[in-house]
Length: 405
Ligand SMILES: [Zn+2]
Image (cartoon, rainbow, N blue to C red):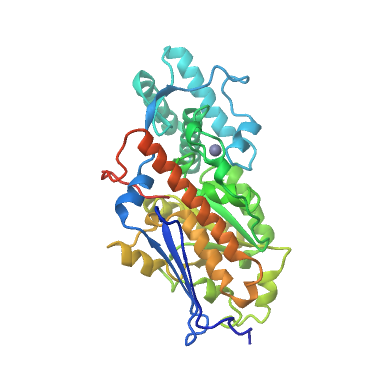
């Protein structure tokens, strides 16, 4: 038997922010249903919150900074890791940058970026479009094509953001929020992996980045989808950790989803050594958070499963869902969709649900969840301030909307 729940019946409710609330976070301990704690993450009505997070403010077109850098526009290790990456500079990213630079010289048109970075404009766009399509076609196997696709996305985002975005918070420098983020140590029994789609790399409204801003890059590590240098680091870590220590937060529709409680509580586990495995300090529990839109996440999950099969010989990748996940989304929106919850909120949910397990109650996971919540509030405020400064309505309906991610 595990320990008794502390303070049964206690309802702890914490309300974030007064004037500009982002989310209300309720942890309920039910006396009748031992351990059936619920975590509600209630988003405020969509109009304000979502429209800000949907659309990062656009900026004027700008030229890529490739000529002023010491190494002809290539990414140095210092720059690469400055953006939050932990891997060596991906060879293919620098290859793409090299090719872009050559093209710029050959056609005598400057690389000009617009929108949220990463999108070419003008003559260069037309020429580059033809060029990269031809290159894509010339690549033989599909994995090479895919890796080129990822590297190109990342190279473009990087060139479009260089000298414009703060490397740490990914906001335009004049809106840098770094001084307001409170770092916090994550319990060493937990490690997050942000498995991020290239399209989400350097997005102002991405919330996955908050995790390493708060916890540091060793506790919350970025892994870019399709970047072999990154994926290798992540899978080597999983190999060391062992399959029982790797969980993907994903609503797997084929099987009954496991909650944090199902997976880790001694009360529901037949594994008598579960306490040991949970709190074994040498080997942390690895949680993979898929940081991409719902439509992209299916392909990302498929790749994770393929790599799991390659490593462990089984396609089954252990998944967990947040206890409040489905009902939360169902309640708020007509159709549940993953991209409508944000990555930072998913991490908050994992930490909050782990905190409810008696064997995890003494690691301060509630405080760690709170630190992410605070960072989320800071991000929302920074995005709101930016929109207001740029003269954009914060309640404007956004077409082609994309939620926080
Ligand atoms: Zn910053």
